[in-house]
Image (cartoon, rainbow over all chains, first blue to last red; front, side):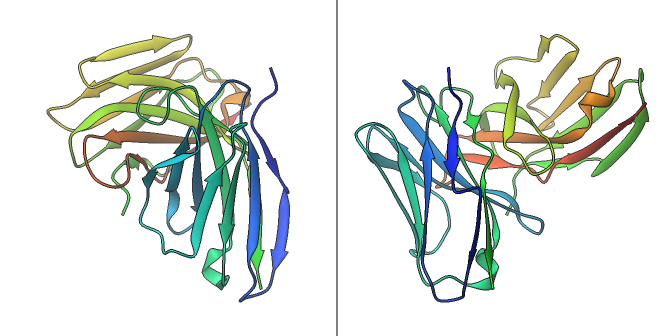
Length: 114
Length: 112
């Protein structure tokens, strides 16, 4: 079974721009959750989608948004990028969601904002 | 803010020794999970322990949970160089916006 795939692997953007990251979950997994990892704040939960509906959202500004498609693939969008948005963005998929089953992570998208 | 706090922040041991990492948390939880992350890559799930369980084993891994002390420990026995990674605990909370909260991790180095 193929693992969780995140694209692109690396991104360099300029302040003020927007960016879209993509995540393809393991086949059959209906939940996709997103995380931001930085040296200062560690791993922080962004949001979770389950069967195309946002089920949970972390404490991030509205510039961070996401969606999930009918095939469970998910995208995350960050608008009006700030330097502090530089981070490793990880997505994870699971069968029944963050409450009920272990997470399977992709290798992340490294975003650098200059 | 992070709910889980791992201790120590970094640990260096010789191959064959045991490694123990601790995690403390603040609020009541449904379960606690341990993950491993190799440098610059995604996390790999190791063990999930539910709030009504006290101990769980998986291969060379042993996890304990003490809900009265709000703490958990991860023991890796007979460590190998391949165990070199960062280890994170993640707590699934009963309430709040953020259901899953990760600690900042313990960086384990196993020297061959």
